Image (cartoon, rainbow, N blue to C red; front, side, top):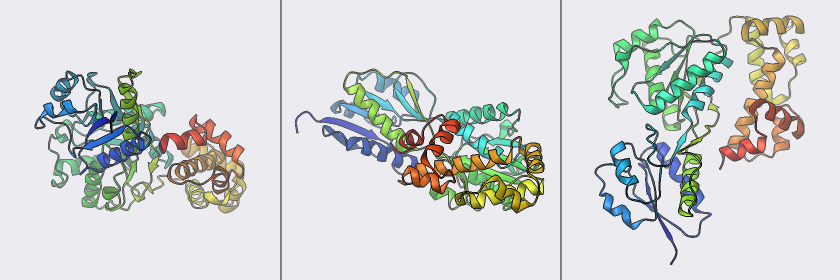
Length: 383
């Protein structure tokens, strides 16, 4: 068909995140009658004959090497890069916002009552450095600090089946407990859970582990199952395709790097602990967690733990820095985020399921908590 735009898609579809990127690209292409996708099932690397690319009108590619990026940028073919490697400024890039993922991980660990935190990254990745920066920044806002492993634990090797080192075991064992450990990717999270297993502290309230990417094939097979920040790679792919479409029409990107907001933390049993020493607060939070869809109120919590509201609020403030009403509201918002991102449930039904009862109440509380309306939140996570 004449007028077709031939688009080369160069992603390693053996990787879960790249398959998700492709799904996003495909979803955008369904809106474009003049797009013709040509998948190569591999990243754009030094082994690929670059002259082959001259037959295409546009390219979406994972490019992880600066020299390859330089050579592609000189070819004058509209190209969008989707790599999570260092920004070079040579090609327009679309990336998940790893700093924001670090923020989400920190807030999740703080919400379960932790006061001690650590960050682990096996390889010195750019994406991992962004995760670390976001994590430390979020902790700093709460006047909390973070423990980092000694430099000799970093490695350039990327073997997920490598034996857990004794040095890593000693580092985790030396951390003050209870502790929340944020890992730069799901494989790193699996490694830390293996360390905890060697130390005999898996399934205890000593260590909570959270990672990034939410690769369910990794997270669900971990013991315990691994909590992870969903980076919404499908949205990254969709946005990359949308950006390329604009470039093909003669538009210039507003920014050299487009950052895509991650989704919520997918909470699994690796962060199911409640690191709360106060038994009344702990019982209250468990009651809230298990009954949030029943429209519970502060009075229901008071009746469950059998103390006065003044006493309960005083103990909540001492343990967590906020009231029991705030804890209920946080739990409702978290549940609303989950339903908005993962279901097609209508907003009035979500309002009922999360205890807000009516959609206007849900919308007001959600906008105050997140800065977005429920519809805006759903749209940006389900592009």
